[in-house]
Length: 138
Image 1 (cartoon, one colour):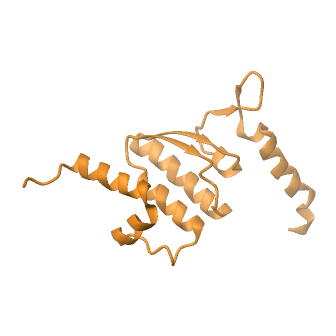
Image 2 (tube, one colour; image 1 turned 90 degrees about the horizontal axis):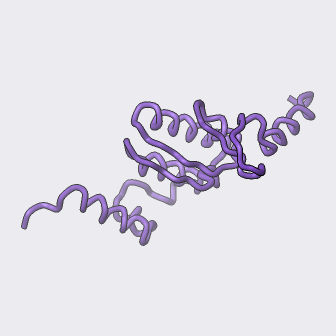
Image 3 (cartoon, helix red, strand yellow; image 1 turned 90 degrees about the vertical axis):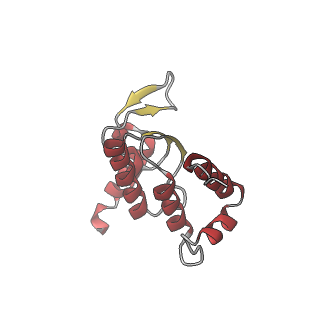
């Protein structure tokens, strides 16, 4: 029997991955889910799944990620976009991901929807104001 073409093998792997992720992880031997936190597992998923030249729709990828891992994810996405021709459409509240260099930010809460600087988003301003009010504690 001829070998399975790589594209079909990739499809089969991805189908198995989404159909039953825990079974896939255990079978693949790539990750021992018992040694990683939920955030670490999520971060590893992104770094494993995102491939050069792809278009990715990410819905709040910061969920379960610490601030440090959100920054790592931002750097990873920036590198994949800049060097490996990936494109990302990201729905996020994370000021770290919103600060992605070169990102075009759409404020979906404005009417009409418009582009803006990440620092002008109300969510980011809340973080900024929170820390400014407590700067003496640092």
